[in-house]
Amino acid sequence: MLWGITSDSVSSWLRAGGDGEGDGTLKGFAASPGLVEGPARVIFGADQINEIEDGEILIAPLTAPSWAPVFGKIKATVTDVGGMMSHAAIVCREYGLPAVTGTAFATKQIKTGQL
Image (cartoon, rainbow, N blue to C red; front, side):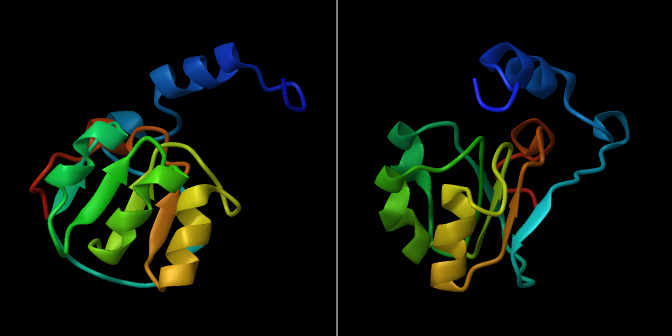
């Protein structure tokens, strides 16, 4: 438990989708600045990394150090969980890639191939 946040409360928050899910609005943290366009690639785990193609925007629940090779291929990252100090945010800033973290439900709202 971290400052009153339990795995149950995080699971409940993710299931609920957070503020704006019903109207299709995504809200999150602008964890790394920038503006890009490209097709989305939604993945849920490291076993799907080989599906990512050059120039796609990575949409994932979160990223981890084992995903490092992906950041040389993608244009940006959008994650369901995370903040300014999350793995996705830090690595995107290092690579100069835009990142939005903590959207709660990007992987539910965005589909692979969507522009």
